[in-house]
Structure formats: C-alpha cells, structure tokens
Amino acid sequence: MTDYLVSYGELALKGKNRRFFEKKLLQMIKERVQRDHLKITASFLYGKILVHSDESPDTTRSLLSQIFGIAAFRPVYTFPYDYELLKERLPALLAASMETRNPHTFRITAKRAFKLFPIDSMAVARDLGSLVLSRFPGLKVDLTRPDMEITVDIRSEGFFVSLDKIKGAGGFPEGSQGRALLLLSGGIDSPVAGYLAMKRGLATDFVTFQAPPFTGEGALNKVRELAGVIRSKGSRRKGQLYIVNVATLQKEIIASCKPEYATLLLRVVMLKTAAALAHVKGYDALITGDSLGQVASQTIRSLAAVDAVAGGFTLRPLIGYDKNDIMAIAESLGTMEISNRPFQDCCSLFVPEHPATKPEEALLLSESEKLPLQSFLDGLRDHLSSESV
Ligand code: ATP
Ligand code: MG
Image 1 (cartoon, rainbow, N blue to C red):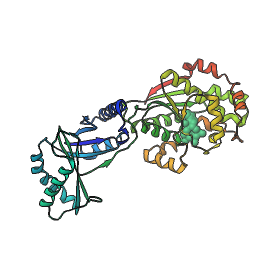
Image 2: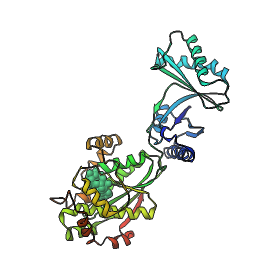
Image 3: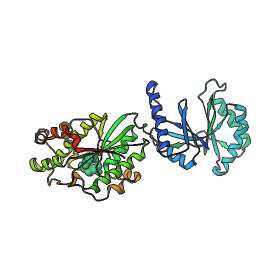
C-alpha cells in the first residue's frame, strides 16, 4: 500500500477555473482506475490530489504517468500530524532507502501548506537537516544538486515525506477544454493529432469517411482499431466512432468536377459533414492530422481555401510537425504498425495526377456547389452509423 501526492503544474490556475480543472482531473483519475479495474482511490488534498494505491508501484506509476493534467507525482510516506513523532521515525525511513540509493549529498525541502503549524518551512528544513546530519555522518548538505532531495509537505492531515519526483504526462485533464471530433483516416497523422488534442484537454471522439464498395471492411477495421488505441491512451471509459458513407459524393466529384480539385473537394465534403455532425452532437471543434506542406492538399493556400469553403472550426495540432517527429509519436503510441497496414482509404482513390497546390477559393466554391452536398447533409442519417470504441 503506497500513497502518492499528485501535482498539476499548468493547472495551477486561479479561482473558479482551478476548481473546475481539479474536479476534472480527479474525475479522470477515477474513470481510468475504474476502467482498468484497479484498487486505487484518489481524493483532494488542498492544492494536490492524494492517491492511495493497493497496486504495485509499477502499476500505479504507469497509471499516473499516463493521465493528462498530471505534471508530477511523488510516492509519499504519510506520518500523522505530530512533529516529534516525525523526527523520531524519519531516520529509520531514510536508513532503509539509503541502502539502495547510496547518496553522498542531500537537501531538505519543507513546504508548509498548513499555516497554523507553528514552525516556518525554513526552520523545519534546518531542524530536520541537522537531525539527518547527526544520524548519518557520511552525508553532506548540497542545496543545488543533491543526490537525494527529501521533501516534507506539512498539512493538517499529517506530514508527507517523499524522496522521489516522477514527471507526469502534462497537458490538461480530458474534457476540461471541451469536446472535439477527430477526422480519423487510416493514416499515420490523424491518430497522432487526436492524441495531442486529448492531451491538451479535449474529450475527443472520432469520425471516419468511407466509400464502400471502393473501400472495404479492412479499411474500416483499421480505423476502429486506431480509434481504440487512441482512446485507450486517455482516461474516459468510452469513445464514439461515427462512420459516414461518402461514396455517392465521391462518385459525383469524379463525374462532374475538375480533377485537380478532387482531393480538396473531398476534404470540403468531410469538413462540412463533420461540422454538421459536431453541431448536432455538441462538439466544440474538429481536429485533423494536416501538417503544413506535407502534400498538395496541405499547402497553406489549399488549407485556407478548404477552410473558407467548408466553414466550421478546425484545429490542426500537427501543423508545425515534421513527418519524422509525427512518426516517432505514432511509434510510441503503438499506432504506427496499424497505420502502415495496406488498405485503400477513400482519399487514396482517384488521386488526381496534377492536384492543385494553389487553388482559387472561388473556383473551389463553385466546384463544390456542383455537388448535392446540402441534400446529403439533410439526409445525413441515411449515410451515418455510429459505434462505441
Ligand atoms: P493521415 O495520415 O492522417 O491520413 P495524410 O497525411 O494522409 O494524413 P490526408 O490523407 O491528406 O493526409 O488527410 C488529411 C487529414 O484529413 C487527415 O489527417 C484526417 O484528419 C483527414 N482525413 C483524410 N481522410 C479521411 C477519412 N477517410 N476519414 C476521416 N478523416 C480523413
Ligand atoms: Mg490519409
């Protein structure tokens, strides 16, 4: 059984906001614990969250290091609120852990969250420091780069002593920044974009566009699997995958529109449909895996023209990322192997030989007006299915 004190860095916001974020973080820790069937509890401890775990240190650390919004956490030894008792027991605690750590230098950092405790934090640090020096004559104080930092958190609930600080995932708790809909293809980029959006505090669900019979069940299964992996990186119990069949519109693009605009028109179709879905289902933003300059449809002019014609509010978390960096994240998430499986995506069908890289917005608009997009959106239900992932 171990206790952990969780701190939330960027979350150290002010007033009402702060309480809202803290609540979300606690909720996300609890949802993840429930989802993974772990014997872990969590509760507020003014300015921090106290986690109480009956799981192994490895399991608990792995859990806490995956939850967005946690800046750092410390395994803590909890002592009752009795300073004399702390001084009596601290040396034994240190002796036990010194065998494995073998430090030469140390420092004490005391924090007095409970201001009614009569000794200020500097004095506590000095007092405990001289206690440690007297019991462990081999140790020296080093305030700047100690081998071992002993932190003592003084609270009305007790003294929390810690020797380790472990870095968390950072970001914000899922849902604390709103809800987003990720346009998820079977490619490498969009799953990574979804992960980054989630990490930044967006509760993220998924929409994919398929064009059966041009695209098969294999392509859809790939997307299902990717959605499952991305969702599993977050804490929410469930995610939603919307599947839209755009085969009719895709055929219409091929039949009636300028070939060099085909990819951009498909992008307009996707974004407009996703925006309509977001409106109905209450999502705040769309997310795509676009990265500036990566392909013809992702030049600055292409992105601007598509956004102008499609409307909606689209975030592109990968806009400044190089492909190599995106691939490294995909590897670490475990999505790379899935994305690399060869299945036909609807975008890779009918790729124009000479795609526009500097499209005219007016022309893109007039080409898009050739499509029965409004009636498609009016009858969206007939082209839409949804499942949980
Ligand atoms: P990815 O690896 O994510 O497929 P990409 O570099 O291949 O990206 P495009 O195919 O040009 O890029 O697509 C750009 C973005 O448009 C994707 O990142 C994704 O967000 C969205 N997108 C493309 N195709 C689909 C699709 N079939 N369903 C849902 N979203 C899609
Ligand atoms: Mg793609």
